[in-house]
Amino acid sequence: MKKFFAFIGEVSCFGLKALWDALRPPFEWEFFVHEIEEIGWRSLPLVSAAGLALGIVLSLHTRSTLVRFGAEAMIPTLQSASFFNELGPLVTGLLVAGRVGAGIGAGIANMRVTEQIDAIESLSIDSFKMLVVTRIVACILILPMLTVFMDFSSLIGGFVAERFASHISLQLYLDRAFKTVEWANFIPPTLKTSAFGLIIGTVSGFFGYTTDEGSEGVQRAATNSVVLSSLLIILVDVILVKAIFFLFPRDAL
Amino acid sequence: MSEAAAVEFQHVSKTFGNRKVLDDVSFKVGDGEALCIMGRSGTGKSTTLKLMIGLLRPDSGKVCIGSEDIAHSEEEDLSRVRRHMGFLFQSAALLDSFTLGDNLALPLRRLDKSKSPAEIEQAVDETLERVGLDLDKAKMPSELSGGMRKRAGLARALVLHPKLLLVDEPSSGLDRITASEIDELLLKVKKEYNATLVIVTHDVRGARRVGDHIAVLDQGCLIGFGTAAELDKSDHEIVRRLIAES
Image 1 (cartoon, rainbow over the protein chains, first blue to last red):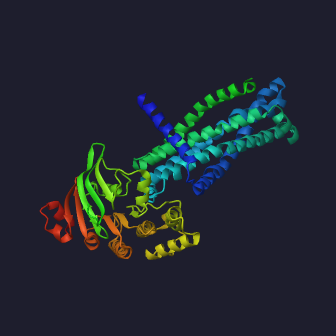
Image 2: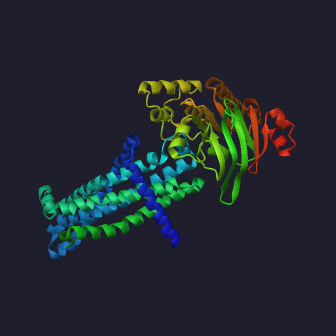
């Protein structure tokens, strides 16, 4: 237990140091832009495709249930409420943890074992800022944007499924979908994914940067990054949902 | 410490876990000299190099680069000292997501703010030409052969015109001809840049050719230090066996 808390403390200090370093010049713009492309742009197809598929699946499942109560008109509303409030942010976080977390963990660990990090340090360049801070900040900024793509892809998926089932028009579908959506349903859940980004960047960066076990360490860094990031995202999500309900009580109803 | 010393180890010890890798090691390298460090595998040779550039800190003792003790210096001071040093890693350690040209341009862009992009480009071209890789600037490290990677690593180490060049096993994994070419390059660098060289090597022929002095480490202790001719007459059997040419 003591070891576990020591580990959590180490990871937290690692993340705090990264956040502190992110505010101190020199800023690594070149590497930051590269990470935005790597983490954001390259995750977009995965997130959009997953959103589309989930939107279709959720629509199919809810239709079979709601039809029994004559409430199929609620499907778009249910779809938007589910995705904007919870499914979009959480699924985006988990997908990015899988794709990006493994990449960050393995990538930095590989640089460690092949002495590339030592080489960067030997050139008087702060490897922590260049490799870790840029990735963490990119994750923090990119996650909310990817979540928006996930949310809207799911609406498109839901519309496609509904269109086939009930020939609903796009206009009517969107009207129903956004009828009950307020900024408070959309902004806080979307922004909470920045915390997921912080978790993914910090955990993956930590496992990658601190590895010292050769090629086995690279593999372990990738696996641990995904497992711990995913677990923490789910746990932190519970806390953040509670916090959002506390700050915006109307959403809790 | 004498004024001529570019590098000086004073009673340096370093332990990893329960293993003492360096035990009270002291030596100095004069300005503009080449020192080759030899020894069996796992005797602390690469650790010695990493201590010299501050990638590791000793448990005790002083590591002086010029007049600065980097064993106890702040990160900022260490960074300043490193600007006059180059390090060729055993695996070359080129950044694998950068082209060869970008690998060389990186330290110039970061550390030499006075240079314009065109001047940086020119410095990269000149350095690559010096090591015979001027046609490979756009290649990724994965496209280079072992010998080319070594030369590319050397080019990156040289691009800032270091006063002290640290080289970790320049001939490992290379055929004798390519190893000899790398030795030639090191001799050229020493002469043209008037640089101090510290080279960790298993290649006796190369050590005798490039090194003004040879240091022999065994089980973390310095068991021999001197010119090749002096070490040929050493009382220590391991020293004689290690530097025997055949």
